[in-house]
Image (cartoon, rainbow, N blue to C red; front, side):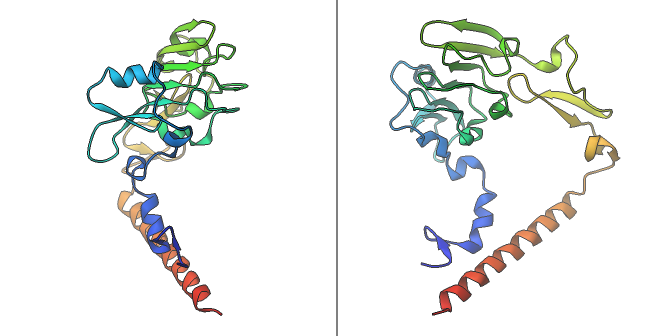
Length: 227
């Protein structure tokens, strides 16, 4: 059927993109076949909690809808680099990347992983953010275990990019920080004072979404009618 993607009209696609990630499903759970491997860090974590269940290589909160992703087992997945879809697992508490031909585990893909407390990587690689980003780092023949993510904002060392005036430092993943504006400031470098124009922003976003949807729908209808 033209004008649709897998049975979904193009008019509805922008609305689907606004749904929570949990409702859309996390593609990262299907990067490798099967459930979390028996005896793995994620498998043990999932088995220790009665409120969780397996979803592909993920461990989720149990519920009628796809629950929050708490663990992800990507061990032995032939990964040569950290997958770009890893951001879908930003709420994970445990994550396993061992037994992969990874060349590095950079910090950038873990931006937003503020809940991550246990991460296993190949033994030859460093923990994202470096050892100082974790409370405990243990190395054996098969893995490097990074445990207890530290809050960089509480460090005695000066941040490379200090937060501007009217903002506060907040953790944003292993060794990463973000600057959050303090009310009533907002905008670039938190220089604008006053309430954020939520209604105006929502109205503009909604109008743009509907206009784009109608444009795409009309374009697809013309293509479908053309011989």
